[in-house]
Image 1 (cartoon, rainbow, N blue to C red):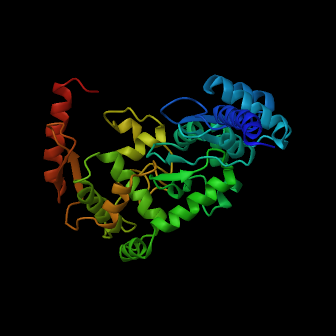
Image 2 (cartoon, rainbow, N blue to C red; image 1 turned 180 degrees about the vertical axis):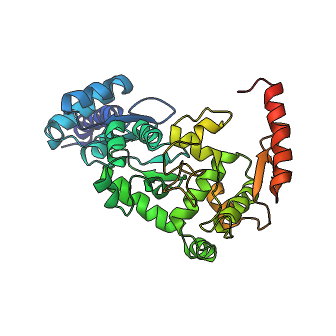
Image 3 (tube, one colour; image 1 turned 30 degrees about the horizontal axis):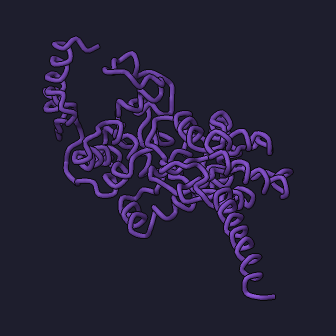
Length: 348
């Protein structure tokens, strides 16, 4: 075959290959979404192949959607869809997207465990971020047998959760979530924190319980070690008047017992509730945290200021800080000033 004949056949063949390569690249390797930002597709337990394609179609470029469907129809994806949170990045094409979804290669998310007042609040927050149902979570947190599996009961289970941000998969199971929180809890309660708790003659759950009260008393992190020291003095006080220890008399525990967190003033008629969380009635710590405390609150207890104050009252300037007193007469003077300020502002 002479040179002219070779050229006559070779050039069209090269052109055909280039066209095919271009078409293949256009369908399988161009940006799947065409967006400059990462798009996430969530595949839950109720999804099948058809619903997966329905979720993908609105975010995919037309040619990439068709390429994905061709690949999917000739694979096991048609019969088996993996749950998960899948990241469709700007650089990801149809082929890579298909591989990720087919093989369950999902993207973890940043899960922030919030410092909230109740386990129902936590269940709601987790349910909004994970595939887990918030109702199921709330039921589990109120189930004694469930909580015992992880070393807690329904009153102490808030102590398991440390308010931090964690990398976790969206479709994590409930058991896997709890074991992950156990691991992170142990990591948080390292040798240094555990030693500090032991020096105070408290265990981690007791520290967390005291921290939850401190957090409810103030949002001012700078003052928390002072408040922690005041409550610790009450907890450890033993004398003729208080042989079992001085009651903590912590107003936030009364709000928790009544589940009335918006109360501005605690009147005497509220102090008679028959609840183990009534720290006016029962000495010592309540049987569990009254919220999931912040890390700042926990560390405030572990690094409390040691002083001789056993009373405190909110300042009359409503600054969110407190006046401290070492005797009852001084405390009553502080309390009168605060009560007068409340009355002047019509706060009931």
